[in-house]
Image (cartoon, rainbow, N blue to C red; front, side, top):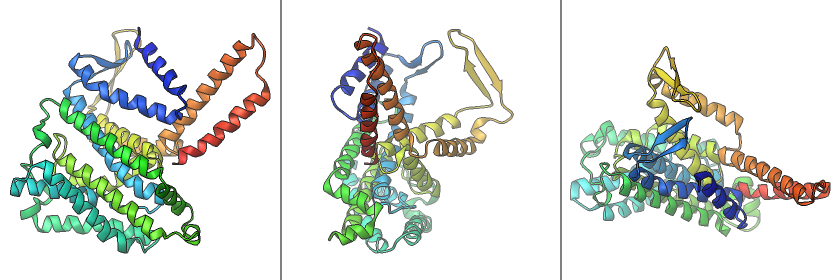
Length: 404
């Protein structure tokens, strides 16, 4: 049985189960991520034979592991900024508090990461209260300015007390979680994937609870929420602390993984804060799925651009030949410029995000396929126009679900 038949059959079964299309796509994506290490052990690749094949090896698993952690960062930002509309420009401060706390406890006091990581999460949640409670009384640019200044202050403290925090170079010598090293990426990869699924599940449940509905209502009209007898500040603080704790958990696990470390450039630099926002918006702001997809996509895109030299080989389909183009400048020297341009083009072309665009495209394909099947089933007859209009209207109504 071919791979296409297997994947197509699985898609049909999931799609016919009544699940929303984006959930079907998400489940298939998780299954794909779960079987990747198996492909590595079998020395198999992924791609289209004759066009391109990507070898699944230890290095690729490490790159995807880093992308999963960045997806967790993006999900934690989206939980507060995407759902309540309280834009945070300095969310990296929570990654740093979680990561540095766990690393310092491990390096200085020999505490195992199994115990130091929960402490890092707790301090991140406390940092969320310390910053969030006074900041959330502000609105608009004033709130954003407070969240922007907070990581800058923390960064200067880290540089000032470089004897404790290692300055701009960060700390070294922290233990890996459960001793898993990068020499065999399979187990740390599954740890990262399990944490990714856990964080996704927690945020998914919260954002679809009554509290999640209030989050969205605050984003749409905070005054209307207050007029309904609810206290918006209480829900905003809850979202802020939850987001900080999740970000701290991801940061603490990240520094004990083979792909991360307690360094400002990886946890709380201005670029990290900006990239997290871009990832959530590019994937689909206000959707946990979108933030996760955007984070993974952006991380892999950056890595791909940074590994291209001064030549690009484009394979010729169905042959073993390739067209080789020489570039005037090695791509890795201008990778961030290209990354910014590609991101800008995607933001302009897909204003609702990658996930919403993908769901819309998938629905069109399924609707056309359904129309064709029904036309055949009626023995050459023409599908009733009112039936087509009903399905189109129903799809538009289901589209509201994409906002959550």
